[in-house]
Image 1 (tube, rainbow, N blue to C red):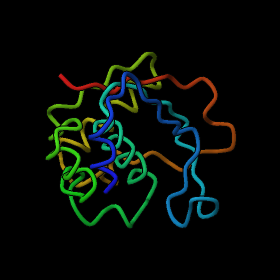
Image 2: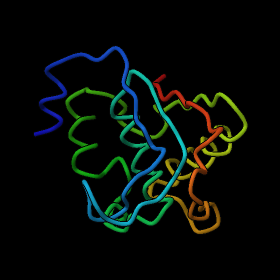
Image 3: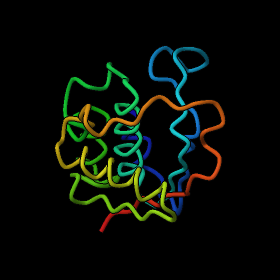
Length: 141
């Protein structure tokens, strides 16, 4: 249903605040992590795919059952033409060094399809670790 709603209106620009996030529970309580990132772009599906990948990096086990582009909501939005249909259609443009590191981890995870491996997983963030992180633009090619 969310994909169908998104199909009915165009978006010029969307912003995803990933400074803090819940990896379980939610929307108002749960295990909080601090990825310390901001993402923005025209493609809501690409943003969602990057967001899921970030949540997986921090251990969101409920999102690890399928590859990102096979998750129901993302798959349906892609089928409807709302945005990117595969990892190869996602372009990440980092604006600084921390953004480059995050974009590299997200690209690798999306290419693998199943999420971020333990070898690329970032450690849990300390409070205020989001200071100085970049705005990362997520677009399709």
